[in-house]
Image 1: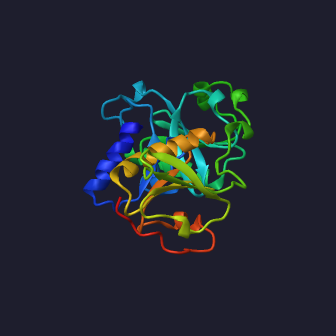
Image 2: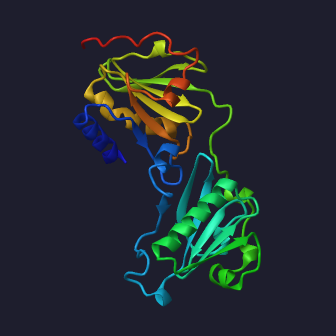
Image 3: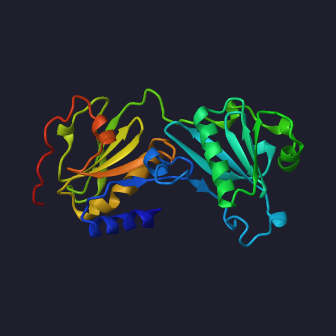
Length: 279
């Protein structure tokens, strides 16, 4: 993770500090990241041949995929072939080669069901329409499906499956400054609650703890050491405040921010950040 952070700085230098950087964590990908994959992002365990080019249909090993999310984004991840890994709040696709089963939990969302249909139909199209797709609702009997995943009574409740949206409620926003102006790199709290952009300083890096995640703002006058350490201090902030590592972290450059960053500040844009000063 540390090396990846430095590599983003190298790319940033190469591309003229223009890109907005998104730090993504498996299982908690941002809406922007999920939109890059059509029809959907699929996270596989590895070693799975596409279609039947190298695997005979009768020798194909079944795989179970979890379809989970909300209208903001749905992800597909391969999980173990067991009813004990399933819950009533999500959709599951059992890819058994020439037989594809879509199991809809009793409390699965419309977005999850639609995405499940997309993935199932896409698998069938990849195999020239040969597989048959079967839709199973909740604990409906289907000997072939349950014969692969096991006893249907092992399926957990929707509550045990976890929330589709993980945004914390009533969170207190904070503004932190990362600077080496004192001669040593340090992170200090600048404000909490509601604050304006007039607290930003072009000479430094700031971390905004907003409701939807963290934003790392890099001032135009921040030196390379501060830019390089930005993501490192964002991770340290997460650890120090007992926040999950999966919390979204987005890095923006002064003059090239996004709507999410701007909405974290109360009272609009406020004053312009202080101009860079020679150190």
